[in-house]
Image (cartoon, rainbow, N blue to C red):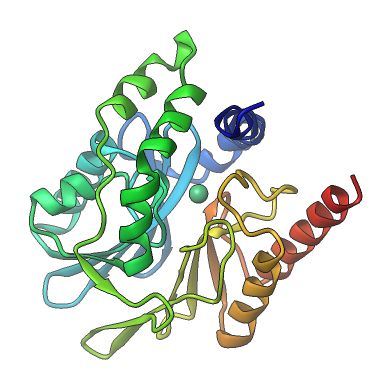
Length: 281
Ligand SMILES: [Zn+2]
């Protein structure tokens, strides 16, 4: 099998399980549009999930002085339009800033919309490089995995998707601190994991960690799509996240339900089991 075929096979396997978990997750969420749902995590803090068709989480934080922070976008432009409309309808017009945590479509698939509205999009230098080098290949994998008739809607939307890099960059190893009033949002790169550029975002004041694609919900017992992953470094990177944000109380994973800090050791256990199984083959 060629590399692309193997990647497509993996993505179909993994996301089959993901779709199975979705109806359960949706139960506690409020509908924004057919594919987009949200849950309130804390005062002014929202987790949104874009089921397109796989469930992917991002966050929106309402900030003082009519500002808002978006962490990741829905997977493509229609979902991102729905999210921005919901934000405006719910909170009025806001000055929005965005952070994206990796080069996959479930991190930055809506960048095109944000950039067209002059919303600054923060992301690491390495993500810019990966969008340039890998987005054609990634798009092919995504389109192939939604090529059946019942997925036509997703296929058509991904077909016209342009994955665009962030426009406010920083060296990945240095990370980033964004300050809004007295609140600090820290973008941290612990090392390679689900991709070589995935970062996490820590909301210091609220003790909430957005784990992005590096972390999955407790209902997952597999690491998900590993086509671009560094499987040996991934558990080491999660360990570094645990050590850095020891006062963390809530973890929002990239996929699956939010929970407490036990999501982090759970992820390490899942990764160690996966590695054990695959290294002994
Ligand atoms: Zn992901």
